[in-house]
Image (cartoon, rainbow, N blue to C red; front, side, top):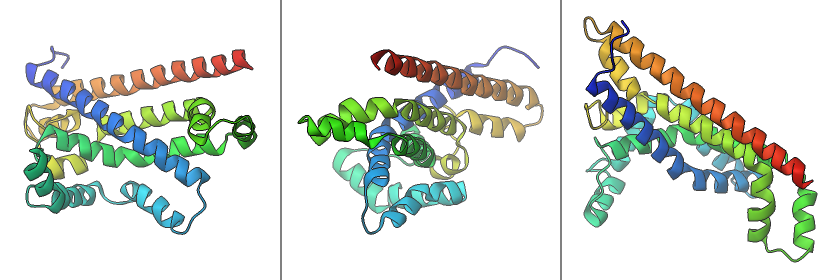
Length: 233
C-alpha cells in the first residue's frame, strides 16, 4: 500500500503544482482589481458583476468546463483567435488545465481579498490622499499592505482549489497522462483500475499534505504581516 511513488505519479504531482501555480499567478492581478472594484465601487451592474464572478461556485464544474471548451476549443471563437494569432492552443493542453483551475478558483480568491478590503479603515486611505498621494500610490502603499493577510488567504484558497480541481479540467482538457493528468485525474484513473487502490491512496495522501503545507505557509505569512504592521504602528 505504501510503495514508492511511480514515475507516472511524479509527473502528475509536478503537473498539478505547475497548473495550480500558473492558475494563481494568472488570477491574482485580476482578482485584486475585481475585488477592489466590488469593494469600493458604486455603479450600476455591480450585482451582475458580483454574480458573474461567483458563478463558477454554483455551476456544476462540468458545465464550466464545457463552456471553456466551447469558447477556447480550437473551433471556439477565442480558441481559434489565440491559435491563429499567437499559436496558443489551450484545449487538451496543460495550459488549458491551468485556465480551468484559474476560473474555478477565481471566486474564492476574489471573495477573500474583498473581505479584507471591506475591513480596512478608509480613514487611512483618506489620510494618505490628503497628504498628496495619488490613488495608485495610496493603493500600493496603504491598501495592499493592509489587505495583505486577505490576499494571502485568497492565494492559498485558490491554490488549494486549483490543486483539487477535477470536473472542469477533465471536461475541457480530458485526462491525458503526462499532459493534462493532474493528481485528481490520476486518482480517478486509479479508482477505475482494478488494483489501483494503493495508488489512489498514495496520491490522496500527497494531495492532503500539499494542501496542509500551503495552509501552514499562509499562516506564517499572515502572522509575519501582522507583526510587521504592529511594529510600524
